Figure 1 (cartoon, rainbow, N blue to C red):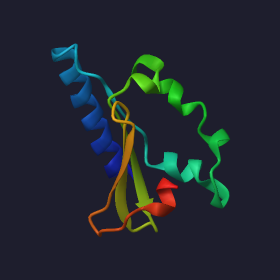
Figure 2: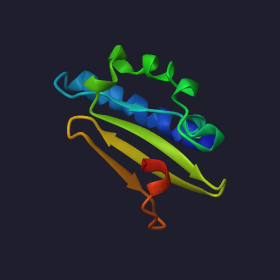
Figure 3: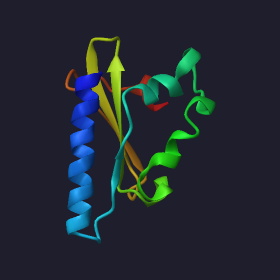
Figure 4: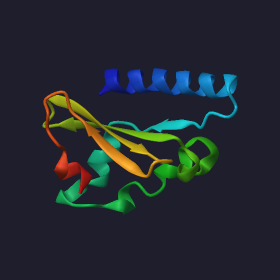
Length: 106
């Protein structure tokens, strides 16, 4: 988890710097790896576990972001990623092992 958190922190810093250089560029937000775990706690969708987390996004408005990145640990052995493309209103699941991620996207 710590390696993933550090990598996402570096991506977040790079994103902030790129937005500073180009004010027309929208920010992205990188949630920590346990966001999806907390959201899907107790075998189902549990929004109350994460409802305050969106207050920490850049600009305080998740709908004014370019992308929201959610790292996902599958089975404690494999990392995947969900990306919400806010402007396109699209969610994409990325997995190097080829899984469609339906259990996370539903």
